[in-house]
Structures are given as structure tokens and as C-alpha cells.
Image (cartoon, rainbow, N blue to C red):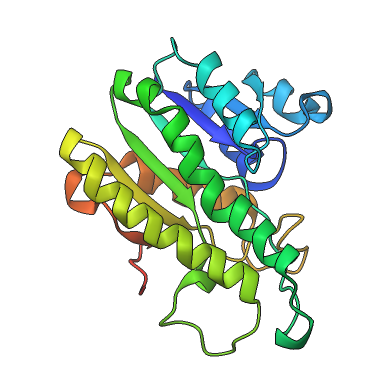
Amino acid sequence: MSTYLVTGASRGLGLELARQLQARGDHVIGAVRDPAGADALRATGARIEPLVVDDPASVAALGARLADTPIDVLVNSAGVGGLGRGLPDLTAEELHRYFAVNAVGPVLVTQAVLPSLRAGRLRRVAHLTSLMGSIADNTSGAAYAYRGSKAALNMLNKSMALELGREGFVCVVLNPGWVQTDMGGPHAPTPVADSVRGLLAIVDSLTPERNGRFFHFDGRELPW
């Protein structure tokens, strides 16, 4: 049995990660914005912790509460999505919010729980990103805040992988695909359970040779 910390665990991909991990016998610490509204997560048997990823004080408090808890795998699933505005209507507020949640938050969470990850057995970190964060794949433009924040997350993970790789960590970014969640909508082609099964298969197979890389949920490596 391994211990996983999953952020954004009250719904969507984070909730399904908790369900599948708990069902196979792993232990999940699910971090959520509103513990009172996390009944579905509570039903999995996961431990619930409050966390607002774009609030540095909340992130630091989580790290303090988990200081004596070894964590084998961190999955940064919390994020904000949506196509956003075109350039004429783009606002600083939108940019700041997306970058704070999608890029800065995962790095600060990793930093806050690094002592717990060092105490764990597996030393794995997975950030959920998006193919829309791939510069090579961007052929349609727009979605400035979302694309930019996910591209930033990809770069931040690369630096993290190089630094922590010296300690035996494996840090990757994973694209869950277009998934049938609140964010992806009901017409998305991929059921959430299928995406999560693929994501977990990648996390389970991580080796030092895969450190710092960018994978689709089906195992394919993606272009930066």
C-alpha cells in the first residue's frame, strides 16, 4: 500500500483518482477547497484535508499538518480551466488567477510537502497539465491564460525534475485528455474512469528514465 496526496480531490479527475486508488488498496489524502462539500470523496474512505492552492498560507498549513506523514506520490490535480477571452478582452485578473492556480500552486504544494515526500518510499510527483500547454501543438491560438499557465507548469516541472532527480525523485506532467468532467463537459470523448486508469498506469510505471517528461494518458510522449 502506498500513500498518495491528491489535490483537487472533491470532483472530476481528482475524485476519480481517489476512488480508484482507494479501491485498489492505496491510501489517499484528498486535498479540497471545501471539506464540507466533499461527501463523494469522504465516501471513498480517503482522509480529507483543506487546501486552497492559490493561497500560500493554506498551502503552508497543509505542509505543516502533514509534516509527520510520509507521502509516496503527489498528484497535483487541482486546476482551473475554460477557453477564456481573446486578446482584446483578456484581463490581468484572468491571467493572474490561471497562473496562480495552474502553475504556481502545484509548485508551492510540492515545496510544502517535500519533507513528507522525502520520507516516502516512491518519491514521485505528477502534475496534471494539458496538451493545450504544448507550444508545438498550438495551431488555433486563443485561451491565453489557460495555455500559458499549463506551459508554465510544464517548464516548472522540468526544473523540478532536474533538481529533485538528484535525490531519486521522478517528476512528470500528464495530459488527461479531453475528459467528461465539469471542466471538459458531457460531450468530451474520454470517460473520466478511462483517463484515470491510464494516468495511474503511467504513475505506476515511472522510472528515473522518465523523469521530467510529458505524457498523454494513453502512454504516448507529447511534444513541448
